[in-house]
Image (tube, rainbow, N blue to C red; front, side):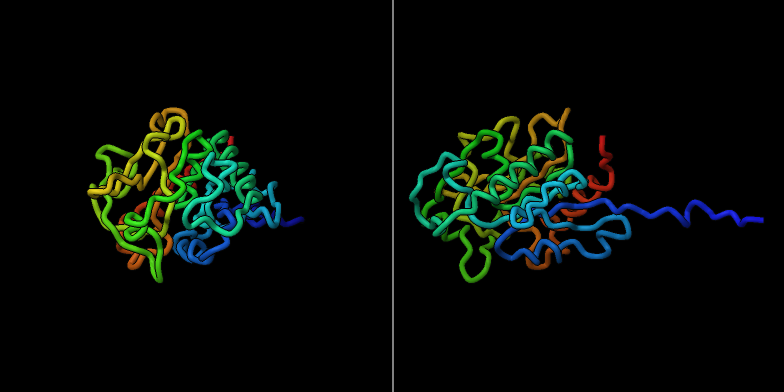
Amino acid sequence: MIASCPLKNNYVLMKKKIGVSYTEVNSLSYWNWFTSADLGSDLELIELSFQKNNTEDIAICDGFVLTGGIDVAPSISGGAEEYPHRPESFLPERDAFEKLIYTYAKKEKIPVLGICRGMQYINILEGGKVFDDIGESANALHKKAAEDKVHAVILEEHSLLHDITGQLEGLVNSAHHQAVHPDHLGENLMANAYFSDDEGVIIEGLEYKDKSNTGFMIAVQWHPERMKEKENNPFSQKIKEQFIIEVRKYEHH
C-alpha cells in the first residue's frame, strides 16, 4: 500500500513581495522600518534597482515603496539646469527605472507608498512640476542639516491620509529642498497635507483625487521610515500599517 502524501506537505507558501526602490542614501532605514512582525510569514521585501536592472521583478510585486534620495533630473521634471543645492550629478537611470515601477503599479492598481523624492516624482510622472528649490528661509525649516528638521503639518479632513492617521495635525520630520508645486499638481492628484507659515504653503502629502478606478496610493514629503519614536507616531506607524493591509489585500489580475 502506497502512503498518500497530504497536499499541504507539497505546498510552498509564495510570499507576497514589497518592492523597495533603490536609493543612494539611508537605504537601510526603509528595510528596518518593516519589522519581522510587520512582514509575518507571508510578506518579504525585495530591492528594485537600476543597478541590478531587475525589471522582471517588478511584475512579481504586490506593493511598491518609492524612496527618497537625489533630485529627479531636471530634463525629466522640466526644471532649471542650475539651481541652489543642485546635486553634482543626477541619476537618470534611477529615474527611468522608477518610472517603469510607477507606470506598472498604476496600470495594475498595485499599492504604492511614495516618500519624499518618491512623492515629488509621482507628481512629475503625472504631469506636474516641483520647485527647483524652496528658498533659504523655507530650507531653514525643511532641509536636512545634521539631523532631519521637525515641523507641523495640517491634514485635509476627509482625505485618505486623514482616514488612515486619524489626525488633522501633527509633527513630522523633514529633509528636502524641493517641493511639489501647488499650481502644477499632476493628473488626478490632490494634496492631503500641508505645511503653512507666513512664507507660504508647502504640500506635504498627495493621494489620488478620484479613487474609483485606482490602486491604493499615499505619498508623503516626510520620512516615516526614520522618524524618532516612529512606532508611536501615526504619521509613520499608521501609514505603514495601512500600506501593509493594502499589500495583503492585493490580488494580481
